[in-house]
Image (cartoon, rainbow, N blue to C red; front, side):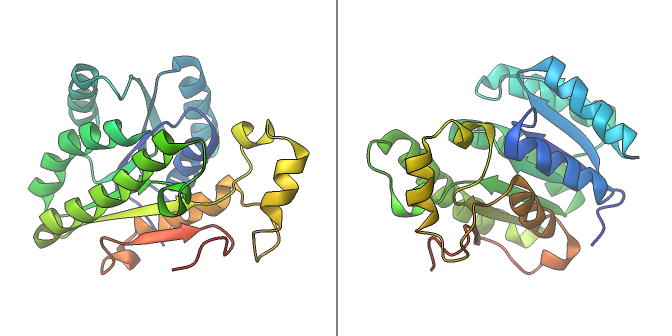
Length: 225
């Protein structure tokens, strides 16, 4: 799979899953626009990508702020010429705002890949996290709606749904919780950010051109169906 010549935007790219996704897409040949609030972390990521032979630019933005999103996406298109791949790794509201701003470029080119990062808890729920689970479930509905709207223009819209992934956020959980979660994973291990990034890279590729409106589970079998 190659993404050579493609321009990709990754939101929430400064750390965790988003950071690994950005590195993976750059490794596959895409030119990256990495977006998040933390300018210094984005700058570090850009240097990391460039040192590995890739191409990337940093765009500091609060993707929950509509005016900032509009201005930033105009800046990305002015600087890089187009947007072909959008990875909505940040939250639900931002996915709507960012897709709204990126879609015109994809429609013009009659080619695009929109990939939303949801969560297993948007599929199975999570006690005590109704707000988080409902926002991630909403992202699944959003994925299917956009997939239907833009399919005739050769634009696909899919979601990746991670299960229990080892990140800075999950490392803060108690050992007891981690062991309980591990027992629920048929593959017997916690996932990595690389596992999620590999799935995103596939959905961004030409090889995934006949897949749209799909939720790709990356959860070690924790949830099936």
